[in-house]
Image 1 (cartoon, rainbow over the protein chains, first blue to last red):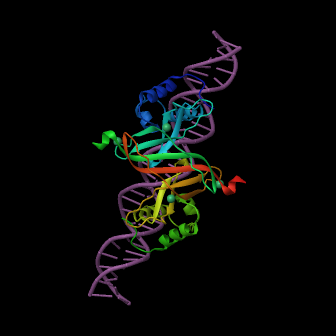
Image 2 (image 1 turned 90 degrees about the horizontal axis):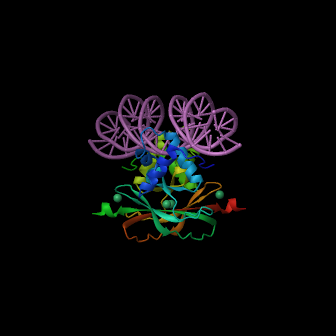
Image 3 (image 1 turned 90 degrees about the vertical axis):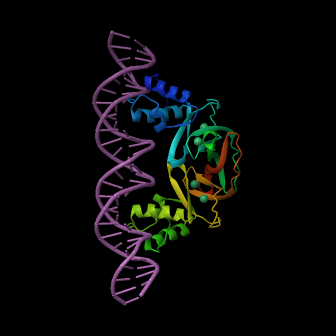
Length: 126
Length: 126
DNA sequence: TAATTAATGCGACTGTGTTGCAATAATACG
DNA sequence: CGTATTATTGCAACACAGTCGCATTAATTA
Ligand SMILES: [Mn+2]
Ligand SMILES: [Mn+2]
Ligand SMILES: [Zn+2]
Ligand SMILES: [Zn+2]
């Protein structure tokens, strides 16, 4: 079940995402919130927001889950077929425009393709 | 640093991978080893084998790291540009033949593409 | 304003993986 | 072979991300 009440914590989390250009891990998110926001609450808010399709999540390096606002998907269907990029130097993660073409396989029915591109971002390149 | 000595644990781990059709997480691997093989030892062996390019690793669902024998890459270069498939029902993970084409991006230099396809395997489909 | 119940804070817990250190055992070398 | 060297192991303690039960707080509803 998703979010039903407008609370301070909810607003803080949403603001953090709105002010962020990149995707945020729970850790990064907490660094951008007042220190007194409870850790469990943050995780629960992320879960609820994901349930509601307000944010989507995906895995990046070091087994870390990242979250970002959903911008393009219609609230009804909710498709996340875009790729993500993570910089090997600064670890920053961003959503890409690039839609991923889900390939067809012989032995399997493929429903989803998770693509993480890794390399170097513009800032770290020079 | 990689493996330099031929030990019982090393043989057990290698056998487990050789007998497995799928990729194995540390957890799955340990289930296939005698119960007395130490957990730390397993993780250390996986690290060493990966250093040596005997196995490669990648992340699947639930933030779980999977390992599989390297079959195709020449020991010198060592490229892992193939995709992986994970079944949403039985969670089994396999390496695919499918080479991944690393796309070009404007703002980033892409060095690597990690592709995890998710869906349903043949067994779970019927 | 009072009742309902979603959201929160807290502490304990789980699971995956890591690390320091002393003991063990594989290998090299005479 | 016997010994020295040191990679590997076992253990226990730790780190870290995330989860959960439960009592309390507070947003919403009526
Ligand atoms: Mn995204
Ligand atoms: Mn593979
Ligand atoms: Zn960077
Ligand atoms: Zn399956």
